[in-house]
Image (tube, rainbow, N blue to C red; front, side):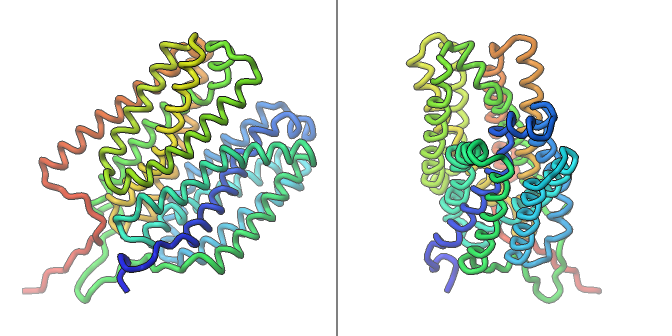
Length: 410
């Protein structure tokens, strides 16, 4: 049976989505538990906030090297090992007697999290044929979207009700349950590309598709940095610049997250049929939405409408970018490409928040939406330039294996 003849692997992809949901929830759990964690450990709230930075920094530094070191191991077995380590990291966080031990637990969690994404990010490409990639990535990406809409709020509520340590303990237990689901419901895949007699395998840095992979990663850095410049400080924009009452903030964020889920569904539909047009369209829509937020901050109805459009358009972008990377990468570099993509997302998250902090201290939220709009415009221009260069060179979009045949001796 060829990949095109196989039924769509819903069960395996949903298993991956559940795993992503729990791991992303754990990554951002401290954001909702800052006060109780700081009080219990006798540190400042900013020190607890640094746990997010430490986690993301670990992912940035370690993901690509770990992915390269483990690229020859079974994907399913490696996923199980990573989940076991991540569960241990959350157990250590739950029992940490000091802030220093909690930092160590977050570093261990970051190592496991980065390698998890290197494996899980490319897993969908091993389960489905190319024309189903956008649909498969949309299914797995739903786990991350749901984590922001439901996971982090539920984890926060649990932490306030039973204590922050209980919240991390529950995460650890859920990861073990996910490991069991992976054993029974996630199909094993052969991620290795077989070579015929006389063929040699290219090293990753010489793979012809690596420039395209790196370009997609550059796009991610530009887009995610611009987004986090503004979104990190969305609360002061809503409350101070737009003048909404405090109780409206959670409603707007829920609308944003719900719209993001709709955007993810659209990415699965549009991305499969119109991969280039879908990406251009969502980038342009986000650019327009944040420009409206900058221009009409004093008009509540316009702000609400723009929030929904912003959430819907941006909600589909990560899935489209991941699909794009899996389409341009040869099977030889998909796992390394997924690791680099994870690194790029975390650079954008941390870098955007840092740039936003400087701008916010200087001028409040005035320039933040314009910076995001400018970043999205830069991404569109970069895409247009790359597409024109690709057409000029006659380079097709490919996912075929890259093989080199040794010349025979004379």
